[in-house]
Length: 331
Image 1 (tube, one colour):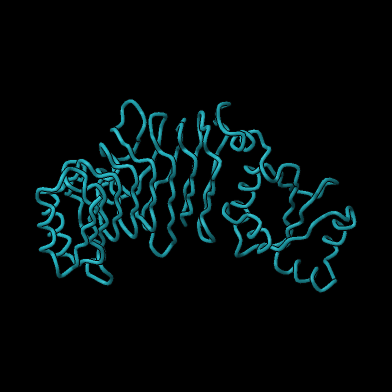
Image 2: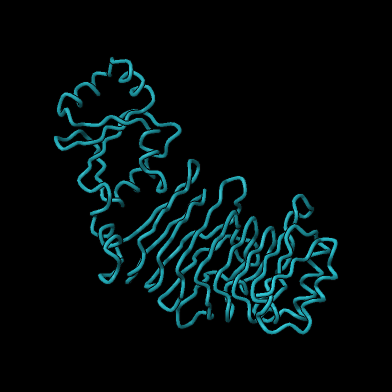
């Protein structure tokens, strides 16, 4: 592709799009102001067929913080687009429902779609997006409310889905993510601080790279019980309770004011471990609250902890920080 770089004070460069062959231009327009991005949108409405790859972003800081492209139809204006990067923009579903677009990265942006939003099903719009990266992206419906559900089905070409967002930048995000029978899906990474769930269904033969976490202040859940027999061995192991903590038994003792034990219990269970309510002979991991762990470190464990440890010398003692580190990428 021919690369055309448009500087914020060189908008006349956009005239070079005229007469270019369909999909022949890589257009880069990063760090523009609002008038510059308005000019870019106008040029794309006229000559967007020439663009095969587009990078555009609003410079920081500007007011408002995001540039409004909700009325811009990427499918109609840029019908030959294959790669898209947008930073600090508000966009509609045409970045996902596009005849040729395969790789989409949105950063510090807002994405507005219908609710529920489904791709890869008989009744859903067509999409060619194989690689979707959402970095600090608020995802909601046109009324700026959160989505109840996002689902990718058997006809989706999705290969990689990555969604990152922390509590300082996130206001709305989907409540449920479903990945159902996606034949090419190899990677799912959802690390969004908030309350949400992820469900995996049907045959997912390529999915072997998986990480799901919601950080210290979030709470998420994940379910593998509907994974099909045609899925990767990795997913079948999670479905069948043979995950990385299979055979491990955990017991929590004490208070954990800064650690979500409910979330940790769910994650441990979904990864094959057992969480006990009372000590048992097969206990392998003893997780102690702050006071109990400090006493253990000083060589003066509480009577309850001393009694449990006397039952088995192979019991490993963990603080909540130790367990959080063990569950990195999942907690």
